[in-house]
Amino acid sequence: MAEKFHYDINWRAGNHYPGRHRSWHQGGGLEFRGHAPLLDVSDARRIDLLASLKDPLERWIARTYRQRSAIALYVLADLSASMGVEGQRRKLHVLADLAESVAASAHHSGDAFGFIGADEAAHEGFLVPATRTAGIGVALGTRLRDFVPTGASASGLQQAASWLPLRRSLVFLVSDLHFPLASVDTLLAALSRHAVVPCVVWDRAEFSPRPGLRIHNVRDPETGETRTLLVRPALRRALAASFRRRYRALRDLFVHRGMQPLLLTDGFRAEVLTHYFAKMRAADLPQGL
Amino acid sequence: MFGFAHPWVLAALPLSLLPLWRSAAATSWYSWVGILPRDSLSDGLASILRVLNAVAVGATIIALAAPFRTHAPLERVGQGAEIVVLLDRSRSMDQAYAGSPTSTWWGPSRDTKAKVAQRLLAQFAANRGHDRIGMVLFSTLPIRVVDLTPRPEVVQAAIRAGGLGHGLAETDAGSGLLAALSYFENRPYTGARIILLVSDGGSDIDFETGRRVQDLMKRERVALYWLYLRSYGSPGLLRDPGIGSTPTDSVPEHALQRYFEGMGTPFRAYEAENPEALKRAIDDVNRLANLPIRYIEVIPRSDRSSTPYVLALLCSLALLVGKYLESERWA
Image (cartoon, rainbow over all chains, first blue to last red):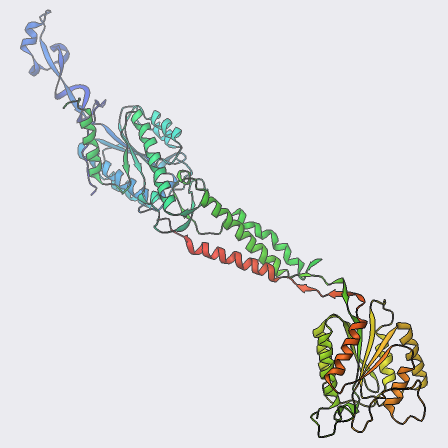
């Protein structure tokens, strides 16, 4: 059973389907929305005597409340070849863990779960439209772990973003984001309707090769480009610095779009997301509290 | 000039470009090569390894094609003489050497005359490094052993060969001289010409042969040196020989000596009883040999495949070091 995490949204859900999250919709919740004439509300239990007396038109006034709604959680996953590279662990395993956990957590909260994967094009084989079916995450995770990605780029993510529902959803963008910053920015623009949790999946091995003076011939699974590297302390430092710069650039991009990135370098644990959402909630508080 | 023993192997030479095109090294997948920092040392190393790889393959192919330098005539100018050693191999040379006329049979030397002759010639040739020396053995018939050659090791080998086995037959100095003289025929006169006759002397030269020898000696301008090896019972050479031989001359050495004296070409006789006689002979040759001598030396075809092999080996060793450092796994 996949670990679950606690999540929250800081926006009002647009769905009518009852659930756990605050929404715009009037209904049987506890959140006071306002007053309305009884004829519109037609719920005599909610008659507000004080408001009725104050009404200049002398109508019966009832209180209205907002219902709590369900939302949809989507995992938008990069399935390009770079996600299949063997490091300390395959990134696809991290993705599978995360997808399972999101599915389980969504089910636990009564929310819908969907999955869209993409390499050069949106991957129909891995498409899971939003569903409340129990156990969908396990089946998906098993298939993801066995998947051998061959896509030469993640450019299909753009198209996959258009498969998301129009209603604002909580989208977990899972990718190593090993493509140009401009493409990342375009992708984020396409996702601007949604609440995005950018999960940057890197492997610790990517920036810490085996110790010792060695010659490595590396090959890019997407472009086929090869490079010979004489790995030595200086290059090790340069490599780490290169990844640090990359992360800063990505973070700036995300923050510019009002997102906080989540960097996963050592696999996925559900508590990381719990912590992530807790921090987001704390950030919502006004200054001084 | 260079050539190849197996030129068709060179058809494989384009294979040496393969390493430049694609490396055979073990590669590991890396998620995004684009994020790797540019490292000039690594790039340089990669190019060097590729070039080494290409050179190793190319050099091996060239070596397999067996390159050689073609034989080439090379004109050389030296100081020295053209000497034909005319060595007596008659049966009489197997008799014991008598040394000087005053020595007795119980004296120190018990070697055969052939042995002594061989030793003297080896010394002589060793002292005459710049000469071109040819060699003819003669007994009843002359045997041409080696043509005029500037190579001392060939001369020494010829001298050793001349001392092998027993003597052959009778002595016919006339035909031997003709054979020795034939070495000089149809050759440009490029330096002093000497025939060094090493003999115990017991030989007559008939009139007709004598005339031909005399003509040729004059025409080819050849000096004759006679290194005389005395037999037991022989009176030795004449101290002051008169001109011309007389039919009544009972000692064949004397007859031969008189005949040589009368030819009108430079002639010297040495009695090889002691090292000084040999030294005198060498000194005389030295005096004559001051003329510059021009000769064509043919440098033989020589195999040159070792250089590309060594080059390929060095490249391969360097590649081996690279292979040792190479890692098949990134992490």
